[in-house]
Image 1 (cartoon, rainbow, N blue to C red):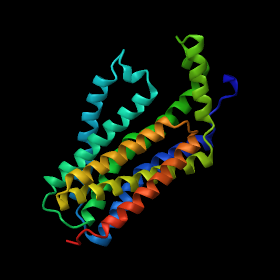
Image 2 (image 1 turned 180 degrees about the vertical axis):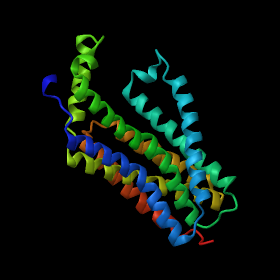
Image 3 (image 1 turned 90 degrees about the vertical axis):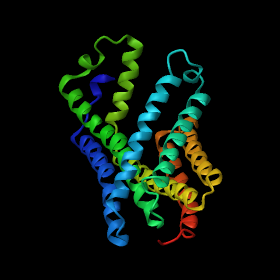
Image 4 (image 1 turned 45 degrees about the vertical axis):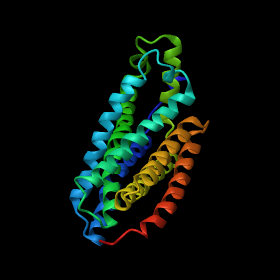
Length: 260
């Protein structure tokens, strides 16, 4: 099995292109949005920093909740439910606090879009870009060092599982790259949509309705994407269609928000 595994130049380039796409899209969309609305880059930065804060809190909570021996690590339903809930609560609370305090004087609906792009930027770089270039570096190392170096110290079962993962990674097709990029773009617009919903919670003062809705949608999307028995392709398609539905709903609410 292992002797046939090789990361072709095309595969490595596809991973690199995916990583670059993930890093560039939020900045490009933010630039175009600023050009159209004159929205401040400080709003983008606020979204970026708020996600960093939310992510840090989430890491701490995950380390505590999913510690060794915890029931949450052995029951798939509980595992994905709590994972989704942590993301929903931490990220949407960070959005709410950002709109409520440092951006409290911002009442134009365009703020929610710029914030969402900043929020998404951190995630796409930390997850999409870093993961893609990690595959590039690991693929180069695999081609140069081979199976022996990668399976050193592993028992037979662990080595077989690791080789299956490497084989799947080496089989990264153009279709896979396109789906990953579309999924990433869907994630960008999902963050914008959720930002619109939380922004409405601040502007209307109806926190119980709109903030809880954002947390619920975020939690449900993450939970279903992880828990449902989907293939990689199915997972990407689910994320894309989920984003389309949330964006449709959020756009209707966006139109009701004030221009200034």
